[in-house]
Length: 509
Ligand SMILES: Nc1ncnc2c1ncn2[C@@H]1O[C@H](COP(=O)(O)OP(=O)(O)OP(=O)(O)O)[C@@H](O)[C@H]1O
Ligand SMILES: [Mg+2]
Image (cartoon, rainbow, N blue to C red; front, side, top):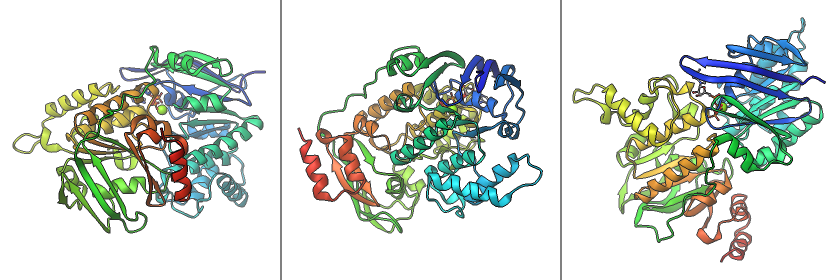
């Protein structure tokens, strides 16, 4: 039986960048096929070719053994290809139902459209995944819910080939489980699913085969059964990398750097107090919606604050807006690169210097391009940013490299306190451990680092101490010898304090 989808000898250049060279791939009906590789390896580019968004320079695509040319996403949809993009591509001002419905209408080739039937299908696809209100404007939803709407959109199209480009990077554990339950159901129905992910556990728990790309080339396709995660990682990076987190400091942290007392916002945060010490990495855990980002934003002058005191170096400060936060060396790096992180149309170097134009301006207030370039080069090198030129916009970078631009910008202000919201989301295994080392070095140099992460192993591996939020309140603090996934989950799900405390004590020493 021919494969559902085959790629052979696919090549693609973007100007001087050879993004893909002689790439092959094959997907069978009824399999979940992982596509793995470092940031910039060419995973998304390959799938954009399959979806007709861009055209290959060479190579052939076959569906059911027949060569096809896919000239646009509409043609791809008509061929039964559904693509859930890495970066969310919904219309923010349009309702959830209309977003799903618009796609279905555009793809339909029936002469007469059954609008009512389509709407029913859109709602059903959505209800399978989430309880978001179909009438809500997409822009008002959390990233995780937007991601689920994207998935519902592909499901409503009756795709035979479903491409998921890092679909779980913005989802909670529970949402991820739900998604995989659906993916397995679709597999049983005979769909072929391409699952792009940086998470080894997802490959080994759910996928049948894994294809690995490196530097725009096909490296290997392995049967998951009988393969180890180390083998996959070795093919991805072409070198051995340490799986270990950088060592913790193991000494009493320094003096208090920032003290937050009784912080409340207008709708969610309730009486939150904590202290961050010099040289410390403080982890913040909790479910999506627990108020983790809101907490960071409220401290950094980016969100509504109703009550609460902030002391920096023991002095009361008022941080009414982000500019004031920056003046105090307090920075927030957003989890949402697209909406509030980067300027995707400006150059990489302008993005890096955007927070502190003073550093790259001449005395007359003009921006000094060469200073800007030098700064971007220096920070880019430190973060191993893979970019053809600092004059390009971040939109041409792979997802993980966009994250590095956001980190470079944070470094450009020489921060004292940094809040990082999901700093390694969408970042490959190699770059991820580089970022962990960078954050530990930053802490060692005396900076206070606060890391919000939904990935429990990352919180445990990286943080010196973990605060857990539940429904806008601090539900507990976990010290270095009590860090277990169970302890975090217990506090995050709001188990009654006595139960959580017993659990925590049970794991002590
Ligand atoms: N429109 C474009 N213009 C120029 N270069 C591009 C463009 N799109 C992609 N590239 C380059 O092609 C390479 C492959 O990028 P791609 O987005 O496919 O990587 P990826 O494997 O999906 O990485 P990630 O895991 O970070 O999402 C990168 O070097 C990227 O900078
Ligand atoms: Mg990608």
